[in-house]
Amino acid sequence: MKAYVVGVGMTKFEKPETRDWQYWDMAREAGTAALADAGVPYARVEQAAVGYCFQASTAGQRAVYELGLTGIPVYNLNNNCATGSTALMTARQFVEGGAADCVLALGFEKMSRGSLGGGAGAGDFATSPVARHYGIMAKAHGFEAAPPTAQIFGNAAREHMDRYGTTEAQLAAVGAKNHRHSAHNPDAQFRDVYTVDEILAAKTVHRPLTRLQCSPTSDGAAAALVVSERFVDAHGLRDRAVEIAGQAMTTDTGESFDSGSCIDAVGRPLSRAAARQAYERSGLGIEDVDVIELHDCFSINELLTYEALGLCEDGASGPLVASGATTYGGRWVVNPSGGLISKGHPLGATGLAQTTELVRQLRGEAGPRQVEGARVGLAHNIGLGGAAVVTLLRRG
Image (cartoon, rainbow, N blue to C red):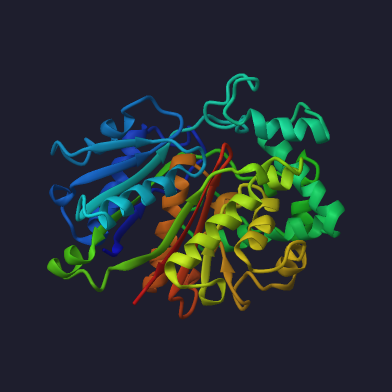
């Protein structure tokens, strides 16, 4: 049974404490927008998959109760930064498996100001879920006073530079591109445009990564309504429907750790495996994709993901971004929303915000950031700990 996204919605992503709101306010705003986009009342929703990282157990119920009190099952999900796409995948599985015809996938986060620590629930690194990943980094590079996530990705960037000759300017080109894209996105946390030189001159978080190459902490929510083909036909939703053509989640194998490399520990093998499975399940390849929303938590992760998804060979991602191949006028448009670096990164919402952007692109509703003729979109969402989700979306 096929699954389709027929409605999407999100809040504006904002710096924590900018607005006087709670996570249920965000969820109500995003969920209401997704239902309105589909033209489907909440009473039609049969189940809800709700993702978040920093709220208490059953926060999913507190959030969806803002939409209605209909007694449906609510599933609370936490998969670190891959939480939003995990909610989408759960909804798709319910629909494809015949358990429901209409499922709401919802993700939200109300975060604290300042740099993200070791990940949701990191606590003491000795007992942290990501202790194995940070152990790889500490053995190879030591452990410094900088934010842990910036350290492990910064060290991955250093390894990439040493191994392949990637330059700091190529890393900065990722930030410059994504900040430029976000200027046209009213839902983005940041809309300022910067040159490569300005990116390089910004405050260093962990060498070689500067502040403008790092995703911020953010408040926000996003949602998608996932339905069966019979629901699409019964409710006349073909003009709204975008097919989930293929989707896969992978978790770590020995390949993440055996090399002792931060490049592998932060997820290049994980993402490559998820992409391969999603391509196989959809019958599509990277050559069919027009527009991509990927997990640029740090600029180096965008380059690593180019390689994992098959946009280029390992080591060729720096020249690829510098060539203009991943922006308007190039082969693909990557992160037209501004990505995590500029749109923002409320952990539980990120994967569903990517879905929102791609659905709007494939429907031709993205306004000044529209990718001309886009028919196939790819979303990539990854979390340390770890999980990678790759989703291929197709429009008629």
